[in-house]
Image: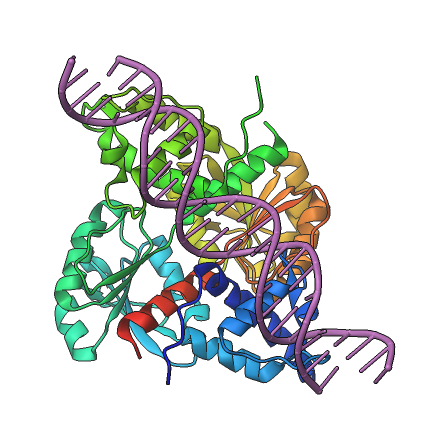
Length: 212
Length: 212
DNA sequence: TAGATTGTTAATCGATTAACAATC
DNA sequence: TAGATTGTTAATCGATTAACAATC
């Protein structure tokens, strides 16, 4: 089996949108879907969808479109959303709290199985049915449960120090929800979630829209 | 005064990162900062920072760098983060709950002043000090308080219908946290927050990293 | 066959980087 | 003056779109 080429990032970001639309269509008895139907409210050209799908090795049928169910499976399997991965969440403040209650992650293969917090008064409790442990238990539980993934939701000024603990405990992939860029060793990957970057775009759009 | 050119989106997304680094540096008595210092852990070239700043009309001083405080002010004012805007949040589920408790928005000029929920049992209560109102009060309060901005955090299958209500009530800018693409009239702008797109990128990175 | 849709190649567009000039 | 840093122009790179060929 030849290694699937890593697609361009913009294409990867579009796949969840395709999936969302495809799954809505999948409730009817539709068998094939054309890119013209898929493009829906999206503001780019339908040919780009064909390019994206071709990158996944998918074939359409002229005059019909793409087989709907096969398309859904192919995208989910490309993203790895058909297999579960367990993760820890670190920092149970407002954002961490929300992410613990967010079913959309587990629907997409990312199961948050426990939270950790340095505030001992929170430990021992449960949030959305998931236990909250003391940070002192992190290393032990990471090893015992074989966890490789962590969602980092602590205040930014603690982020680097906590990230160091995660690395020490054996975590290999960090989804960083803080504004702090992390310094990590080889072999540990990081994905920065930048909500403030997104707010910046929204702010500029609004400034120009309201023009004040 | 000539209208500031709308910069490219990637540049806008970088500004909050610059701000974060600049504000950390601002606690020392540093007066000037060079792009070499700013580039820190970022994985692009320092010349891009100069391009971004030039786009804002900022001038640096050869051999010294950019005046730190002026830089912070210029970026904040470009983003409109030095002026407050009031907003409503719609849907007080897990995510909505978190965003209500998230101080980072109000630090950047976006003040969420109230929440709305169609679940009447939640109405009348407070979350993070902000009142939760019934959806039936939306139109009246939007007009009375002169609110133009809404954060949409309802389940995706209600999103379009609630968006229609928002438009009806007079909302002009929607930050859409649902996966549903919205169909909106002219004069109402929408900014899609796509957490699942971000998860997709993280998932693909992990797949390639763990290579399984 | 005609027509609708996919598939591919070339052109365009925009963002980033490289090379170098300008300035204090 | 020499050297460090900003500033600018040209080259490169990558993603999107346009044009058209292929296919059922």
